[in-house]
Image 1 (spheres, helix red, strand yellow):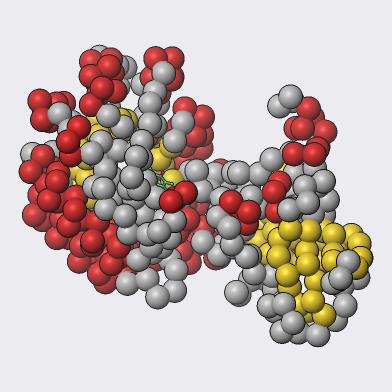
Image 2 (cartoon, protein in one colour):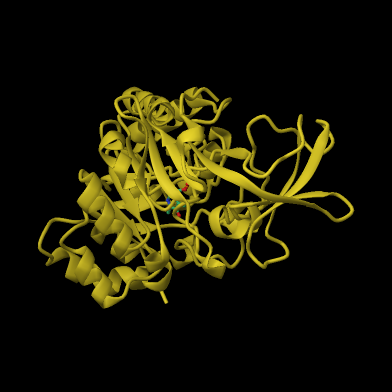
Length: 379
Ligand SMILES: *Cc1c(COP(=O)(O)O)cnc(C)c1O
């Protein structure tokens, strides 16, 4: 990963996002827009570092939100189009959303029935969509599969209410997670078969997120072909709302080694934590990469890396290094812009990482630090 971030200058722990790496992704996404006329939204649940929203807004068309708070953030800091989806909305959430959003995607015919009138009489024109469930699983990771059996996410074809078609401006589906355009292609076959007939006459279709567009090897030509096919066949605007792809590999988590110890193997305790600062390591689960490290036993000195919390399983993984770890050594975790700062917690009162930006103009700069009040104010 090519970055000129001055990792030594940063406090630890801190997340740092690199403008140049972010732009690299955004250029790729922009090229998809240019070849298809599709609109691309930032799914804020993956990346809400609004410091960079003006930069992202140079390339993309708006944001999508999973809640009132995310919608408000997108509206305030990004501008352009603000979209929102939730499995169900409360009356007071709808009241908060109506003045700030452009699209509301409902999860069920009943939610459409409850709120369509309110939306139509709202203070601004808002387009109404329905999230549908193509019921085709293209992955076997149930935690991240909205098309899995018994899923609450999206209206299945048997539950679709044809009498509501004229209330709907568009359809939305979201079933992918870190997947290629072949999975999208398969999903669209199911989508068209079940819902294609309703799409004719609507204004748009939203393909959701989970498109790993900026990952090396993603078949962009196929995505372009698919988007253009749907656009032309149904005469609709296509939206994509990736989260991960926008800031993939654009950020790092910098941590320090605090202590090394031994219990049948070398252990190292860091000032970062899997459970607090990179919860997807445990939830997904996955093994993040650390710069200049190897797999266990690949290099001379292998350590099991863990955090400061009292959770026994707060373990990041086993890594090997050329030299023995020493207190004060810095470890740089890669791909830490996404699903990191949006998901972290202060469990155990653990310090939240600072947030830093690395830009061409200003170099490496801490833009946010956290302290006791951030911990206390939530309790
Ligand atoms: C999570 C989610 C996204 C973004 O997903 P990524 O995997 O980060 O691209 C987009 N839309 C909806 C409805 C989502 O739930």
